[in-house]
Length: 103
Image (cartoon, rainbow, N blue to C red; front, top):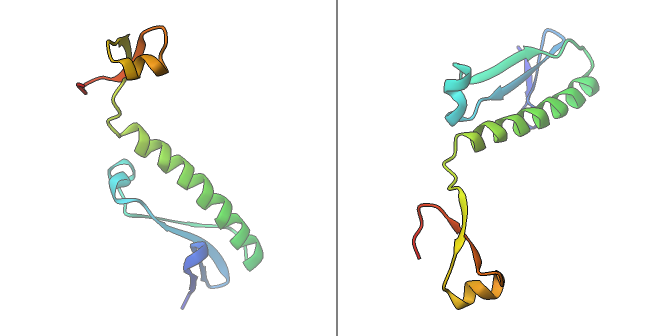
């Protein structure tokens, strides 16, 4: 039987530590699996915990980048405005507007 520490995504099986992490639902098509599991190649609980924290941080950053690439973010267009409030913020009569949105 293995011992699992959910906070650190660490599983100890037969004295060897493994990293376990579920893939976010919206990224399962990118990986083709629902979860990741691989050996940390250590028998030290301290080393496994430290490695899993580092791996987890890298994965979270990578996954956030993938999720942001998949989002529909409207482009910003600069145009002229006759709105006096906008002219307060953009004194040269330039107004940043989101494309696809009307005022």
